[in-house]
Image (cartoon, rainbow, N blue to C red; front, top):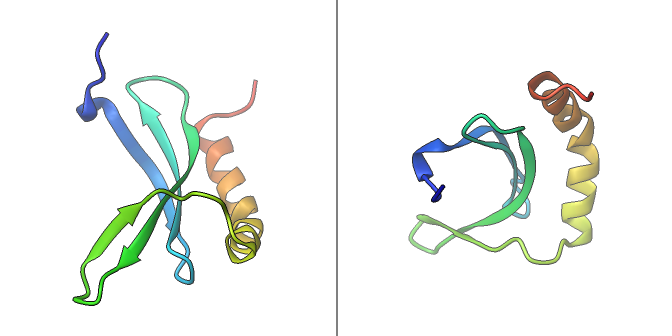
Length: 83
């Protein structure tokens, strides 16, 4: 079955204001929701946003993720309870 962008859903996302790192819970069709780390959002000089690869995480990214992990875990458990 070929990839269909209309079946790819972002269920919940968080963005670090400091680093632009985006963490999201995504689901394709009726599959199990999964956590995605990235992309990273950048603000251009003209104020528009663009996205880039998350790449390697900085300590600021790790500290932000550490602070957010309980909220992310709770959301994942609600969307896809562990077996």
